[in-house]
Amino acid sequence: MRLHQVNLGYDAQQDRLLLRISTTAQTEYRMWLTRRIVKGMWPGLVQLMQSTPLARQQTEPTAKQAVVEFEREKALRETKFAERYDGEELAPALPGEPLLVWGVRMRPVDEGGCDLEFLPKDGQGVKVRLQETMLHALTKLFQDALKATDWDITLVVPNASPTIPEAGGGERKLN
Image (tube, rainbow, N blue to C red):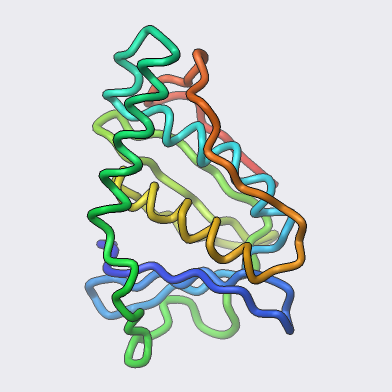
């Protein structure tokens, strides 16, 4: 599937975040993310931001940090956050209610970017490949969406870590 747009918003009645991903094929994946999932996903998302090919080439922690910050700033400048999410005429990719995410698998991809797999308690999940720009944009959407909650969670992009998993390995699973 080729991504078109991503939307993340808080639903106070459900006390969950609703992640909506539209594709160029005019379908939409909808997933509920609980506080537990978001809190557990964040360290993995940060690791993925720190495991880009350029960041992995740096041996000094300050150089890695500078690369991550540069890539993030560039990605956020290139992302069209003001563009309205166009989800009105999309066909649901999964029938029924949004998928209640029970676990998430994350892993870097050798050529850059990452795979995220959103898993229900039972059944088939949704696998998404994000390019580096979209990964940074998604983390910004998480930070912004959490401002509407009372979850008492702060999502911070910390300094780069000197121990970064290599692409092709380092899969992280949350459930």
